[in-house]
Amino acid sequence: MFLKTNKSEFFRQERGSALVYILIAIALLAALTVTFMEPSSQQTSSQGSMRVVTAVDSQVNLIRPAIQECQLLHRAGDKSIDNSSSGTDPDAQRNLPIKPNSSHYSSATIGPTSGRLVKDIRCPGDPGGNDENHVHIFKGSSGKFLPPPPELFEDWQYYNGVDGVFFWTQTNKTDGFIQTALQKLDEKFSECEADIIDARSGAQDLDSSSPAEVECASGFTCFRVRVTMKPSAVYNGDSDNDESSCP
Image 1 (cartoon, one colour):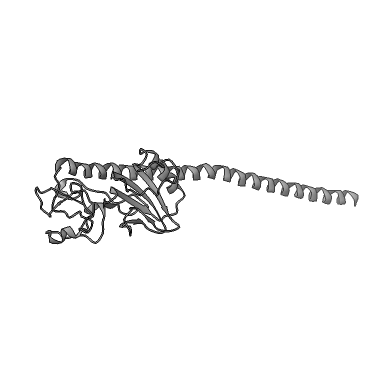
Image 2 (cartoon, one colour):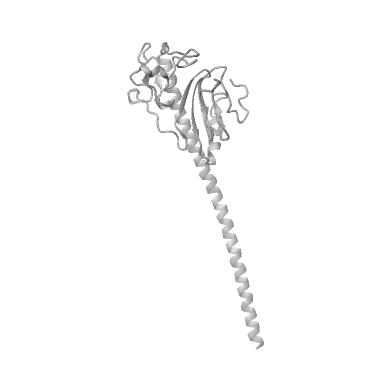
């Protein structure tokens, strides 16, 4: 009887010890899982950030030279563009593309667009003289094609007015790596050349006109690149205080 009691107690202790070991094993497995998952998550975020930087930067390096080439090849531009304060394109530079939705194109064979997308901009002075039928920069006839906007971002938009010439893209996506990517992009450019506009809490004006002609829409973050800049330029993207002397 005594031996039987000792055996029962022994087996209970063994079962208890086995349960402790199982619980320890589960805890160790959970810790290992977290350890292996964290680097993977960080790696995924890093890869996502790098994709954004590469895609946006490559398109900037396609768009800006195409705009500048128009100015170099057709220095006189189109002098019939009305850039007076009450004209179709107030303070616009006549030898750089004007907004594609300008009423200047009302008499052109291809009329104004409904928006101001970069993919629709045209080159003043091509064809020569003061002809309003400006040739599209990013169409088959030019041999230049603008790819779809970078993943997670919207189409590039364009401005030519009182603050100079610039183009921008925007996103309302909340992926954590986007803000990191935009900061990396900003660092690739010289001071005052590009900026990040945080409009997630409310729309932000992008130019100094009253009322503003263009804005970074509420709920979005915008990345803007300048081609030319005038003294009136609005610099509201100085989130890291490295562009306090702009313009």
